[in-house]
Image (cartoon, rainbow, N blue to C red; front, side, top):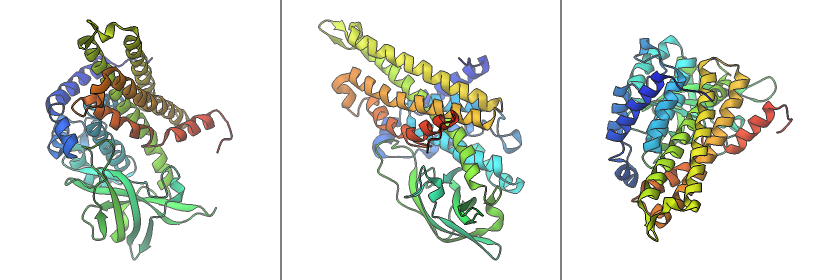
Length: 387
């Protein structure tokens, strides 16, 4: 089991105090109103959460990936919407530019992103291209030194906030020698003519996060907005998702931990037949199972994060990320079901936070690679010829 350092645990305390003071008192209202709290995003930036893994030259802390996972877990322990906002802002917004961007692109975009003054999004998923990224239909044609982008994207987090500054869009830029589409990533600034942010989704959960479909109609940007090498969009996407899956696992750990703490508190206070319900084995054993879920999910997640920080080979990291994401997210869904059962009828009432966690958990098994995709990756790592 990976043991976090004293510095990591001290940092955890800082983020926990922030979440308790700045998010917890307001999240029920934000969730009910489907309100995206830009003011708290700015405060998260002031605390340095968006710049944890960025170099100091761009205003970041130069910390390790494990620190980011700690922050996501602790924010997600209070609210999953703000947890995914942080995860997507760093993992899908900042990291692709930091990893693949030119010095000019980094200088133009990273300072504000790292400070939490703006957000970036990653436009990958389409109506017919989710897990099958090779089915991408969005196209980008190079004309007279400019990229002309046409297509649609869906389920894009942090893409339509008032502070969203840029979206990295994956698009077909040609055809490879083997006949498969050539995929590249192109930076499209917010407000570019032809780039339309469609109305937000009416989602089951994550009500306080920003998620939109996007439309691109003859959107024209300079040739220099190509992110990384032309034709390397698919490999960039895979590397981005490895990191993202570990971060989503950390978000799931926060969900499980919240279910555990809420259930312990409620089982100690709620009485039936003259005794706390926690005295009943049927309830106590279910809560014991939550402990197992939390500790196992946390161990797998921080093991994968440690591999990332150690520069482990891509194949090893991909497998560890898939294992962590699969177990942690499926456990989170189970944990919310168990906690709702512990709460009984109250667990079904929106005035109790457990109802919000129940709604928020399901998407964890879908975003950044479904559970089925994780099983596919794990099976392939064993040498199985599964398709």
